[in-house]
Image 1: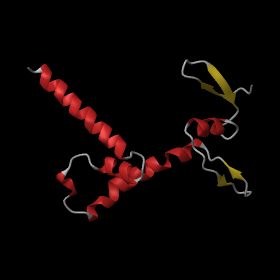
Image 2: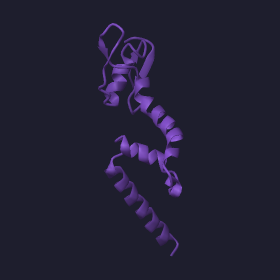
Image 3: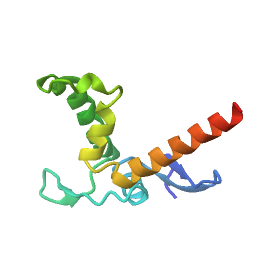
Image 4: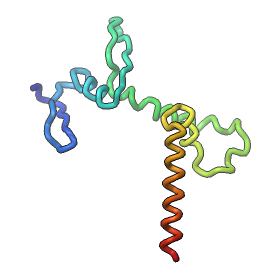
Length: 117
């Protein structure tokens, strides 16, 4: 076992330690998140990119959400719509997510109304 960056299981037990992100840890993280993307490094070798590449979409969403919506009129009829729309259209949250969320919200409303009776 190499000393360095540790990884733990859900019980807090040590699974392994890695010398660096690019020396083992990125493979572990890519398996955990089912991140199968491989990119060519500067030597033309296909490698798993470091974990930072998992978060690029989040950064892109923040850029898009904050910038390009002004070309559409009347979007303000809904509050807090930008993130759900981006997540829907990028496939991060499919229809089933929104259907389930609506069902949960409806049940919470029923619970709340029954508590007030």
